[in-house]
Length: 207
Image 1 (cartoon, one colour):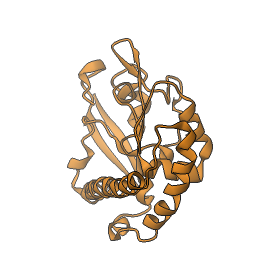
Image 2 (image 1 turned 135 degrees about the horizontal axis):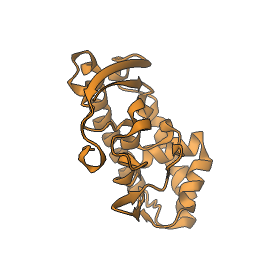
Image 3 (image 1 turned 45 degrees about the vertical axis):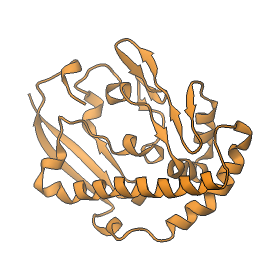
C-alpha cells in the first residue's frame, strides 16, 4: 500500500521539531509506536527551557516515580507493558501529553526509519540542519553540565534541585545570546509530502 505522508518541519532553534501525520495511523498498530521503546532523557537545556516556559511540566516530571536521576540529567523510565514498554508521557488515546516543543531532543525530532525522509533531495537542507542541531545541542549540554558539576550542583538531592536550577538559568541565558549561524539555513516552517510503500505492520515496521 502506497501512502502519502506529510512532514512539517519547525525551525525554532534549539527547540526545533518534526511533525509526522503517519503517527496517527502508526504501522506498528500497538497504539504507542516509538513511545514503547524509548525512555526520555532531559538534559540541562531541556530542564532550563521548561523551567522558564512551563514550570508545571517540570513539577510533573519530578512527581513521577521510577526516575533515574543523575547529577545533571533525569531519565523518565518507561514501564514494562506487554512485549514492549509504555512511555510515562504517552496516552493510548491522544498520544504524548507533553507539547512537542517542550519534549527532549529525540522526542522532538524522531521519524521512524521506514519514512526515510532524509533520502529526498529537496529535504537535504533539513537533514543537514537537524544533524548540526543534534551536535550543537550535545555540545551546549556538555558545557552546561561541566559548569554545574564544577559548581557542586546536583539533581540527585530533591532539596538541592531549586539551587541547581537557579545556577543553571543565567548560564542557559548566556548560551542563548549567540545562536549559531546555521539556525538561519532553513525557514521557520516548511511542509513536505513523501510517498512511501507501507507493507510492514506490527513489529515488522522498523523504528
